[in-house]
Image (cartoon, rainbow, N blue to C red; front, side, top):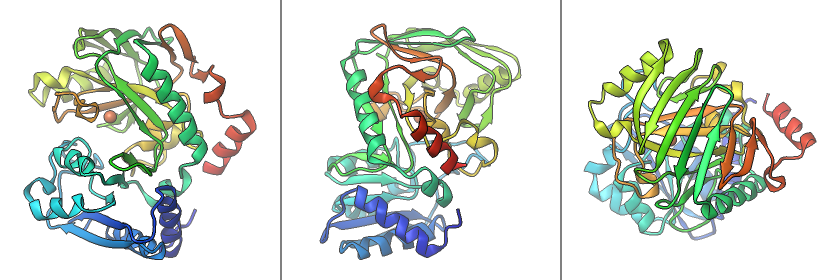
Length: 359
Ligand SMILES: [Fe+2]
């Protein structure tokens, strides 16, 4: 899709309508250095068109690269931490558009606690268009959220030999369906998945990443040979395998942080517009398509403050897995990567149309 500036403004208007932006509300757009200034312009124009009062806060310095092309992808430390006036202004807004990536930072938590709804938007514009959220995705993500909220245990397996159990007594569920109309709630455009975390000492078993599974962060690569991750009491005890296992081991060791070995969020993808192969021909993104593709399992290690945990390591690894079977209290949600709960299924013709539209 070609997306000129006018088209992008139209897209932002649709997005702000999904966020229930009303006349007279205040929209704060946050950017840094020279990053995504055209996004800021598009959101400002869209918000004005809807009768809101927008303003733009541009921080003078940029945090570490998000795109993974160079340097470590650290999370939680942003230039907003040293700019109290900017933070105070953001807390006054009804809706904050985050163009820098505040996720995992305590500043984001402060803004949410102040009651602002928050939307992160950093992906390439054509991804924003192609993976544009829908009310039906929201319904399926929220149905999924209800299922996980009721569960006491979670288990997933795959044909490569994964078999891991999470105890679910400690944390809630976080949903991401690509927009938000609820005060104090955060979301990310585009998305279409959800997750919870196991108890801090309540994850045990083995995760075997298979050929074709995705190192979403930090490497943005497809795994070529199995990687076996041994987990005891919520901690990685060993990582075995060939080249991909060596990379993972060395990357984590580089943080010199015991908390980097913690297990983080776990959930599944619901976005029928997202493609497993998306990352193979477009590496500009931060991998939302790979986190959200329909029927995937998103397995993660590292920080868990998103769900109220205390692990604040900067070493965050997201892995997108195909073909898994996923159970909540022994009730199957996915079998070999296919949803088996009717309310979570996209009808076949609709699924095919969405995949073709996204091609
Ligand atoms: Fe993650």
